[in-house]
Image 1 (cartoon, each protein chain N blue to C red):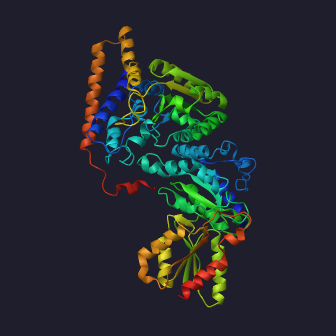
Image 2: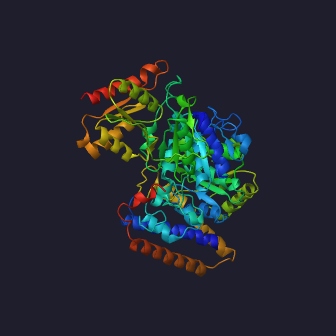
Image 3: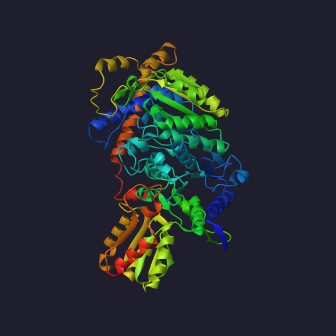
Length: 311
Length: 323
């Protein structure tokens, strides 16, 4: 049930964000991960608050699944003074030290080197915490991917590289920029295991993540975990998506990680429809409350940004 | 005081800070058994072990990013980037990540790390191993940038940088590594953000940094022989810039020359010149003159011809004094 709640919390939050964005209530732009929730939840459900994740421009799902509270999250996206990052970051750089979110990142592939240091720090201090670096299929072509996987394997870092392969690098499909289909194959070149799972099946993601985690916590080193999924919406909210045929998108949306999991829960007798609807209603109320909180929150005072540049 | 080489002073700073704080780790290419390409990390591996002295692959982005992640986790990493010319290889990690960590995350995470990198020409190392790129980094909010000119400052600034809660880029000068100077015995810290007046004078102010400090002092001797009394300011830190020391000096002398080894165009001289013009244009008796390198990559074989030197500074000072 927790897996369901976590995925649905991401879905409903991003649906609401799409709406308030379209209403012009959020400055800047946002990237939603609707359709990919099973990856965020499957991975983060295995982690503790002491573990750290580094995420991407499409990071709402990972951040929320890791446990970030909705109010500071929403206030940040609305650019308010009481946002988690004082309104300096917006959607693309949300972080939450309290829940182990080391930051979303606006530069593709840039979180990977930083995740090395977090994992190194855990090992250095003798903690059994791990670090997860989320990145997309597009990022796997950055030099930072190569540098980071090599170093992580070399030093046996407690780090899990989660490639959320949604088939699209911004406006370009994977087939157009990569000779291979399965990114996890690259793991072999660095001397670490590579796993590919159905990223739309939260249980499969969780099982694979448990394997990777056991290895990392045992000091045996990193794993490259590729989760294949699909980006239901455009690169950014409002993207007209002229680069891909509508029927492909429609077809992909028939694989809905949440609807599938709900069917599983009902069929297996873990829950009935009413219970699931009650979870949904509770989440919607929680999200509305966070939106109201963010809307009512004061804007950052003039010049406040100068206070966060140096210690 | 002990007569010490510049590179040895750096090495002493690392030994002392690693002994003082177990969270200080040294990371870089060949920093372990080889002791660094220039000897800056010599003996650290033997003294502190391979848990704290980390040899890395040639992967500048990974190394510098690793330092950031480790700093966010509470360590105090000191990264050696073998040549300042390699900083562009990891520019994203420095500019978009390290410099912005405290800011973007509203202070939830900080980046108390140091990047040491030797810049400058003088060893015929050619266009990709001789540049002075300090202005790029001084332009980035969130970074601190220091450029020691003497062994004492090389030690004192590095120690301060390691203790600083912000990311500090220490741009050493490779042509100064073999130079010697007096270093105070015992604990020696040089504050970041404070310039040093290397020679007091009343006729013209020369603002400079790093190796050019020595050329400026040589020029000041020559000018003294001509009856011109020169004040030489060694910036030591570019960010934060010690505006007060500059302005107080120019108020006294009413004349300003800025000398740096980097290409003159869009360099730190332009910034200091503009700052002084904005703050006290009425206090100037002559136009501000900059001394810097021509708008060309550093040539391999014609370095002497290319690099600004004491004679260039003398000419610039004569120009403003005789205006």
